[in-house]
Length: 235
Image 1 (cartoon, rainbow, N blue to C red):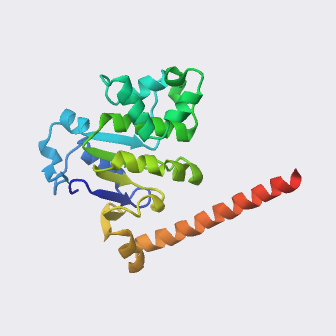
Image 2 (cartoon, rainbow, N blue to C red):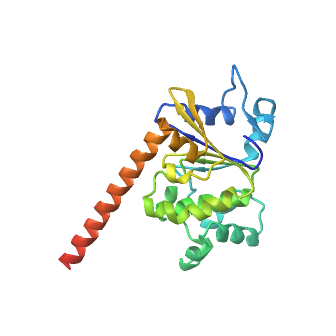
Image 3 (spheres, one colour):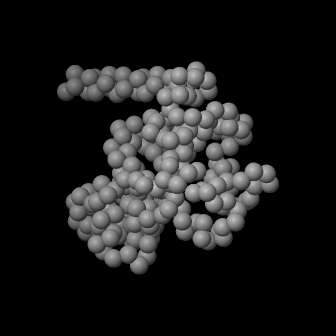
């Protein structure tokens, strides 16, 4: 992965996306080939140093049963309050936090149950921004959210990835159309690679996935509009 570039991994379940992430974190090492980040073989980097350099926004955000401030500050435990606020602003969650009676001292509950899915993801994004890692990993970061919430937090995700080497494991292809390179995985192998426009035009695996997702999104919009129309008539 070249410095400052964005590479996306896509493919069906079992295609090998999770395996690549485990190799990236050196949960185990490659027997053949190599993973290069910014030109450096991750196999030659100590695990603790490697993991400090990577900031993750996961699909299922892990929040501690503590305050919002604590959960953001976990990204850099010695961070000043001003830095925490700046990170929250970049993640577009600061104003929402101030709307809570206890603001940054608001307890999030077990696994963040007192926050909505979108709010939890924004806290995770703020945490990653505060950490200021060299490499950002978005591991299906928005796949658990509805389409509208996902669109709302895309700007925050763009902010966290700005000028950083970024690896995106994607479920919704609309989130990776800007990637410098997309790797399409199937049965543990890279079957296609290129930019979004090239892959759509090629009529291959990615193109089929893209058109299928467009159909699904159109159906979702139609169902939502029909539901809203029905609600309006009932009232």
